[in-house]
Length: 421
Ligand code: UD1
Image (cartoon, rainbow, N blue to C red; front, side, top):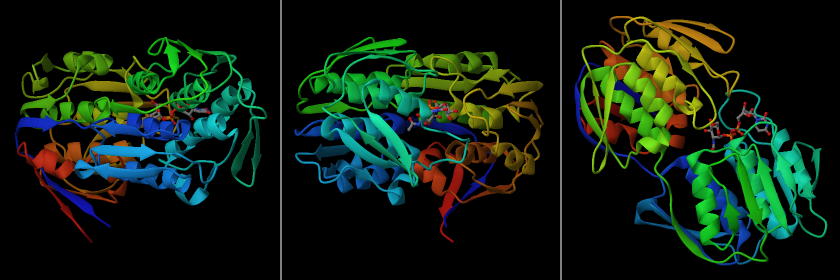
């Protein structure tokens, strides 16, 4: 299995191109199941999660070809070959559950394995099930699979989500496009990836309004047509690389970055002493002074501070002056990176969903283990600041969510390489 070796201390300077959003692309791809006509995505990221989704959709009958080295994904699902999403694929990635809504809408039935994915908490499917049930689906759990049936097709309804789940909002939004009548999704997630999905569905002919707010209205239509859609910028990859100069000094410009995607995060960077300026091409980031300052962070649904940037922020705060408090409100078990950062000399105390981080002068290189996708990259960032060599083992999680991380960082001056065991 590959490892990444980072030798700390090099200042970073230059530009980093930010890819299209993994989490947007993973919701956009299943939209192909809603239409007999082609759906083409541009600005797609080149990641193993995208290959997993490709495999899953192909098993359901989609024809998929990728062009420009994977940046363009052309999909067409003229006929569905199956309505069963098998455990063997679904266990690799939780976002596989996003085929449930589209299959129910198009074929009026679906059998979908309960998902796997990052080990960052229980991550049940109850909100998805309640939402699709409100549209008239009957859903049963048997042998680890959800068996869903919509006799006579889905019917529009008022759907109030108990929690603004991103995946449940996406599933019900896709399902509602082909339901009979009007659906109102209340307490909908407001993430930019939801807005991107709604835009794409609208380009395919769906009648949707209110995306980006807590109430989305969908008027069902009989069929959806063809579309070409550009995937929104990955705000999590963006935030990750925006943090890099806070570890190393220097100045980095993240190409394609926009403050609107990541406002709450930028406010915390400012409070930590990191300057963010908008440029023609993206966002330029630079640390004021020698070390960042402590800040308190609470993760929340969008527009709050994203849980997917909590690990990276924690790594940065390990090098800050003062004591920071972090609260994780989205996933109950998302501090697994803390013990690994402590192997590098960080001072962190974790109690339930809270962590207290007291900054140290210098982290020290060590052998560390990547436990989930965002944890992996937080260890790489920490390695950029650490004295000596950091070896991040088990990086397969990293390849699920970051394309060419070692190339992007070495292009701006980091000493980083991948070694195959
Ligand atoms: C998506 C993102 C993930 C991000 C998360 C929160 C994708 C592919 N993944 O995941 O990177 O960290 O949003 O921003 O877009 N929950 C339930 N029951 C449900 C559904 C969710 O209890 O039926 C809980 C989860 O256990 C979790 C919380 O709700 O504690 C958030 O989950 P959700 O917003 O659904 O996240 P995902 O869509 O899985």
